[in-house]
Amino acid sequence: MSLSVQNVGLIVGSLRRESINRKLASSIVGLAPDRLKFTEISLAQLPMYNGDLENDRPAPVRRFTDAVRNCDSVFIVMPEFNRSLPAVLKNAIDWGSKPQPENVWLDKPVGMTGISPGAIGTAVGQQHLRQILGVLGAAVVGGEAYLTNRPELFDPAGMLADSSTEEFLRNYVTRFADFADKLLRQ
Image (tube, rainbow, N blue to C red):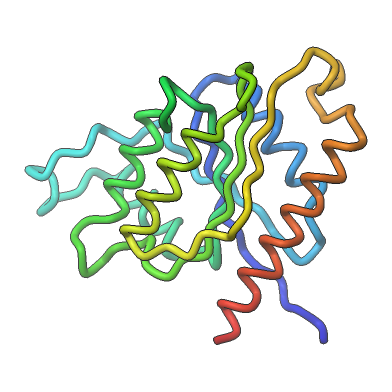
């Protein structure tokens, strides 16, 4: 069976230009099956969530929520901050969840991964993210894909240089694509 192209919103939960998670996101795009077309959805311009702004949402919020709403699925690449997800990512999720009848996360297929210098990578942060997205009704692909950063993991150009990590991520992103395809065909 031939699968159609899936438009994937790529969210990087770090604002740093030289973020290792941004490098990881770039590598994932290169490892993904051709049927996935990634478009980054930036978090950089989002103001902090404030219910007082709900009636006249700032333009960056409208752009963000429209982008998430209009993509078929979302793939999140995030660091772990203090055993949780970064505030900039939580803020974006909050904007997307409100008002409740317009929750952009509801039934949205989501994949996630991340990299951190710690021994357990982003495992705990992803657990929190999975819990939050579950409450909002997102469909998060099962399994875990967190990495520990090592000096030899990326080449000087910022791309993955470890073949076993490439294979692991290629398998994960393919499983995500298959998962999202099944949900989108329903």
